[in-house]
Amino acid sequence: MRHKVEIIKELERKASIARQEVVKMTSNANSGHLGGSLSCIEILVALYFHQLKHDPKNPSWAKRDRFILSKGHAAPALYAILALRGYFPKEELSSLRKINSRLQGMPDNRKTPGVEVSTGSLGQGLSVALGMALGFKLAGRKNHVYALLGDGELDEGQIWEAAMFASARKINNVTVFVDRNYGQNDGRTEEVLSIEPIVSKWLACGWNVFEVNGHNIKEILDVLDRSMENRSKPTILIAKTVKGKGISFVENKHEYHARPLPRELVNQAIAELEKR
Amino acid sequence: MKDIINSSQLMSTRDAFGEALVEVGKEKKNVIVLTADLSQATRTFLFARVFPERFFNLGICEQNMMGVAAGLATTGFIPVATSLAIFATGRAYEQIRNTIAHSNFNVKIIGSHGGISMGEDGSTHQSIEDIALMRVIPNMTVIVPADAPQTKKAVRAAIEYKGPVYIRLGRPKLPIVTDTKSKFVIGKADVLRRGNDVSIVACGVMVIQALKAADILASRGINARVINMHTIKPLDLKILSLASGETGALIVAEDHSVIGGLGSATLEALACIENRPPVYQVGVYDVFGESGDPNDLIEKYGLSPQSIVKGVERVLPLKKRKKRRQNKMFIDGRSEESVPTKNQTSGSGEK
Image (cartoon, each protein chain N blue to C red):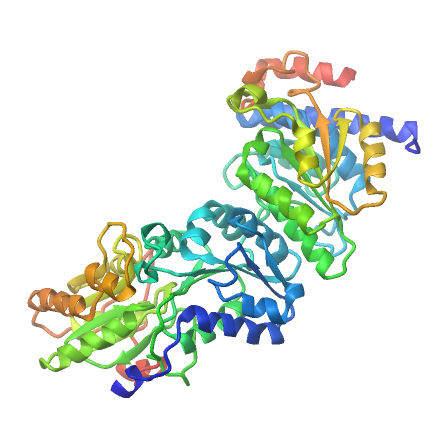
């Protein structure tokens, strides 16, 4: 629609750079969740390079929109984006998961500029997002709250407590993404517990539901625009994604759920990503 | 002392909490009250009546309630999240740990119906672990007020304090045992009765039991000091240290498991003390409770004044003869270096 091709191209380039940083920092740390970090890059790029009202030079700006990475295991992706946006120096990415680092294994708001809430214990970020959104409504503030959930995370009962609460209290200043990459710690989401039908579950809970290709930035931005019209309900975007996206030998490979690339494969991966 | 104990103004700490919330809510417009389908039990319906726009019933969803409270706190509100003690601290334990305390969010957590003395609903509803669960979390402050007036002061102090606080409330109607004029300071315990033969350190509903036990002991010529340890964390090390040195024997009394609560906190504090006094724990000895009248439960599970007296009989023979001065205490490498004189303790509510 109204998002210019050049802008989209530029965002796609950011996504490629962010992926390279994720590969490098996790390999350097020799740990970290590669697959689920790579699957949510476009969502984060769309938010941090376009959608969010924020100021990297003033992370506690009162009028900023809030973003909560409820699937805290994708911390490397968030860190890459925050560094690219200037919240902290890019060089710091190599300190990921090391002692005395500001970049903890899971997002930690006490340590990292730009991280709003400590997450990583799954199923909790949505409730916090709703509390923020409710606070903004009560205070008559215009801030919008965004959250990113993992699909495996939807196993958690607290998600559905929150889902009911949001629609019951008409919390319409919140927009949630689900990174639907079909993988979780023990395997395919549909084999571990089976969370389908996702769309009708959220519809039944009283949400506006959109489906989107989670690797198509133009589509993400278009759907975000559409979702902002006539907001009377909380809104969720189910983003279809590929775990390990962008690297042919990582895509949909379950062994990279909670593991980085071996160092000897890093250059090959970077070369692939640079071509994109 | 007797006049105070026998006051006819009986009131539960949860009732006092309900009234206190309305009072605080009038002054502080940023106080928001949350409950999980227990607005009657927690007495938050009183707040809801006056401030419906600042009251949220989240349904039977304690986990979501704690997360929503955390989010509200980030926008400048002071959320007060309420449920029964067992559910507030047990069902939502990890939410409190990882989402509230980890970030030091300014959330007040209220658990009513604490302890076995909640009565008839029985063991699944009797929280005998909540003090332990909250105490073990970094950044958390834990308060167990002893009567209605102290509850009101504690609620105010908790709202004014910046950071997560857990307040445990009870169901039994209690007499007034604290000095209604005294100031409530988090972490500063009150001496309710002087005595130098033995110290009874108690919290919550056990404070009145301690005072009753002290009466029984007095009739036998034993002068017990009674300390109302209303803050379990941070523990008042000075008052404990003085009690250890001056009375040489301690009883710790709580309506809670003897594992992990006030008794454990006291023993941890005394672990490295010079001339450690004998300590006897009055509490629930690692069993689940049952249904019953609160008075019958208190009797059966060893929480009566007589149980405290028995404890005193156990520790007195273990007491070392020599009178000690106050001892240095070492906890987590922190030491209580300053040795307060006896006169200084009169400021902490001693009568």
